[in-house]
Amino acid sequence: MEAFYRTHAYLVEHNNAPVRRDLMDEIDWNDRLIGIKGTRGVGKTTFLLQYAKEKFGTDRSCLFINMNNFYFAGHSIIEFADEFQSKGGKVLLIDQVFKYDGWSEELRICYERFPNLKIVFTGSSVMRLKEENLELGNIVKSYNLRGFSFREFLNLQTGMRFRSYTLEEILNNHEQIAKGILSKVKPLDYFQDYLHHGFYPFFLEKRNFSENLLKTMNMMIEVDILLIKQIELKYLPKIKKLLYLLAVEGPQAPNVSQLANDIQTSRATVMNYIKYLADARLINMIYPKGEGFPKKPSKIMMHNTNLMYSIYPLKVDEQDVLDTFFLNTMYKDHTLNKGDKNSSFLVDNSMPFKICCEGHKIKNNPDVTYAIHKTEIGRNNQVPLWLFGFLY
Figure 1 (cartoon, rainbow, N blue to C red):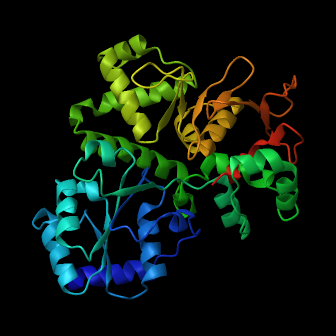
Figure 2 (cartoon, rainbow, N blue to C red):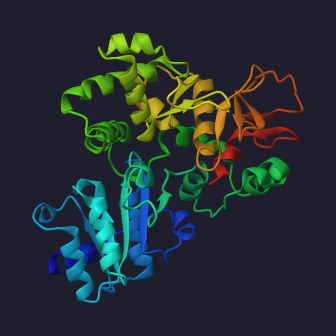
């Protein structure tokens, strides 16, 4: 146990989170079992350590452990939790819980056996905590940690502390909001950098970002998808090839029969793999209003713009990048469906949006909101695209 305390103390002491994530204040920390999901690379480990540092400091009533530790090949979470709480432990932080076989059953037992112990764990976005882990369905509170928003990236790069805005605030008051921000910084000076490498916090590391992202993407498939979905390793090349084909085809409806032929599998398997890639936050599936999986999506897009620059061998299409940015920033709190011929997306089943490149000729439709690239301040139903990066 002392070895775990020493590791915890070292990690907490050396954890310097560059941005305090808003999720820290959104979580009800009074709950006894809390799951924090997120795609690989968005900073879940840092988030746990930040919580430990902020709320407990050097207090030994809180302990961080990682299921990568070989100790847990020979010992159960239950017996560890028992020993920890017997020594006065109150909050156990478990990183990468899915690496431990039978984790959901043991967390349930811990919840029932140790009423004075709080457990906070991190897991992959591929995990379906309530749907697939019935032991936890009625006791776990689940949250999602996302990559940096453009607002968080801008705060990090400029030292500012801009707040987030709701979609309603932006639509009703975007001119005043934009003027306030522009009085301090020029967001467009930072926007392209964000599109290229600002979503994943590891861009701050002194390593090649593209290589790091490719490594992370491979881990998403090799660990998050294969391990959690229990897919045999021999199918790994097929899933990787599918992701590549979807990426280079750009945003469009997938030709499932052709994809099945290309990766030598069935149409049904292709659709399942597409769903897994979406669960891993590598792609997004866009459907017409009222439709969803297992139907074929009307469009498949990359989950965020950083992924586009890492996969595409050639210059990416600007319109595709801007559409992907808008989709990704809306993704947290809003639903997006395929738009009609006059719009790019239908948001929350009722609001049509058109994403416009610089110099795009606008035939102004009062029922459509236009998100316009390279515009600092909008007017009426024409809103600067960058401002939607302040939604979280």
